[in-house]
Length: 65
Image (cartoon, rainbow, N blue to C red; front, side, top):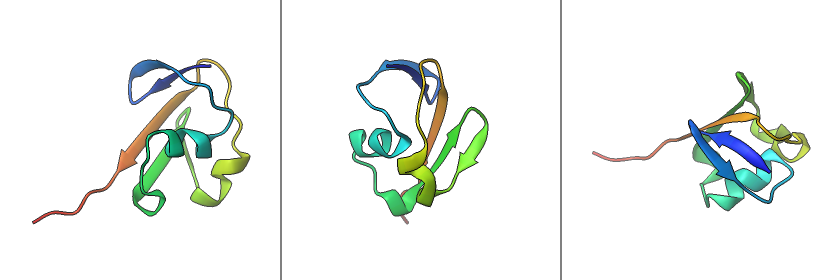
C-alpha cells in the first residue's frame, strides 16, 4: 500500500494504523498519530483501516536534558 508518512511516499504492507506504528518500532505511549488531518486516539489504532494515498503523521516524543 502506498502511504504518505511524515511527508514521504512510502510503500508498506500494512492494513491498520497500529501496524504502521509497529513497523517503525515506536513506543506507543510516546506517539501521536494523525490520519488525513484527524488525530487518532491510541485506542483506535487497530480499528483504523488504511487506504492507498492516506496521509499519516507520526509524532514521537523523546526525552532528553
